[in-house]
Picture 1 (cartoon, rainbow, N blue to C red):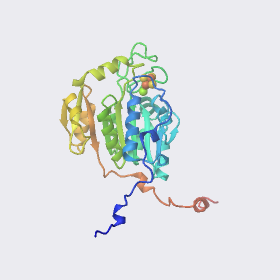
Picture 2 (picture 1 turned 90 degrees about the vertical axis):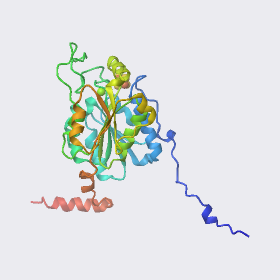
Picture 3 (picture 1 turned 30 degrees about the vertical axis):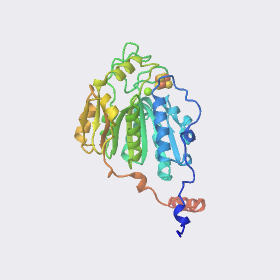
Picture 4 (picture 1 turned 90 degrees about the horizontal axis):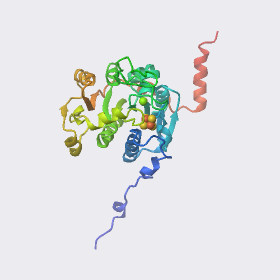
Length: 318
Ligand code: SF4
Ligand code: MG
């Protein structure tokens, strides 16, 4: 007669299994066809695949169309001031390293008013996933020239065409000391978008993803050019890079093998204005992390915190 070992029949189940619905909130108010919808779907999918507890997940944004993102995530969120997403996110990560921190920022928010914070956040290299929604225009304020608008862009601030060459967010990021992760993707290639955000999430440090975005409301011509011109796109391939599935690889047939530890080649690719290189440009998992440096005494009680503050203040007693 066979004995039945009941212990062997017990299956460990997670306390709760999160579905996509657990991460959804409200109805996104972006225009039909706006690239922001695609990123929202990809991020909600990532949260579900990784089973990120909503109460342990934080989306921080500044101001702009893309910065409405936290409103549509059923997690914690901070829709803050223009250009100030980075200091808020760094503060959160510094004292709550247990949280999954995401920053959602636009080309105006990040590369103009927030540029000072952007540079230092790259250098601090705290563990967070940064999504730059680059549609090359201020959308929310109705078509003003942004720092990434191509030269000659007709806008409400430059009706005869913008006069300065744009900032290149990839090159700028690659130029900051202690940079640890730089990637590029596009909102209209959903499989690549998802794979890139996932790779960024897995990186132990400040992972910067520039997403080429469609703004059909104010940049329709740019959208048509971006989406229809497959020759303009080259997918970066490497065993340590962003994985490219077969279907995407067939549709976008320009490929380049690129080692993401090669900073010189990363900068050359980022500087190329004719071709958009999509994938992982640069990664250094060994870059120093300021959030690890500062992670002391996180388990202090409120009383211990007050005692520690008072002790510090006593040093200034005259
Ligand atoms: Fe999207 Fe442009 Fe509409 Fe803003 S204005 S929601 S960026 S399409
Ligand atoms: Mg914009």
